[in-house]
Image (cartoon, rainbow, N blue to C red; front, top):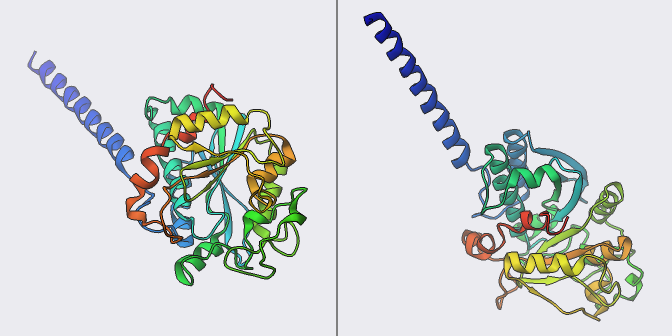
Length: 320
């Protein structure tokens, strides 16, 4: 009997030990954070975080490179999920908008963490959603511009060639763009020809290689949605997608614009024109009286508190 008690006690101690270790490992997984969105996301920081994310969550994240910037920096593509339905998110089209890169990396980490641990996120079943759909994420399409904004000119929005990438995509109205700027500039130059830049070419090639159901281009500032224009009109699915995003974030949908400079070379405008599918520009952060980037230490109130569920809501059964 005494021998039995000793064996039983040892077994119980082992079970307790295994339970404690399992709990500690789960706690570390849940609370270990790779992405720091509270400081500016430059190219080096993005490079380090994105590689660590792909190593930590290799079960649900796949990392690749879709091209090189003008100054030979990698244009990374994150594949988040395992589903057949494909959607595209992009960030940092403009150099000043590196907070959108932080947002997309934060989204990637939180969704991947919940997928692996099979936890819900805000009541959303992350594993189910990411088993049904794959989010393709280009978190920083303009790394050269980001470096210019952080190290050279705080309002630098163009790429290294001085081209505004969001005026460089080849719609049927590209020739009508006239900003009054006809040479390289920190913001307003469309380029000497459509799709002249390596960054815009990389996105065009990406879209041609994958059958994306829709795309979202993340910008700053405004907390508004640009989802239609006078060139493409209302493409199938746009109203439904816009309303899902509006409900998820509280961001305001804008009226269609007839300003050709606003739509004739934009990525989302080109996507709608080319594929007749929804392409929406999302201005993530609040407007203010400055052209300067927001202070990243306020990331939660600027971005995350309102938009943390957006990526899951748009791949829900309500749309896909």
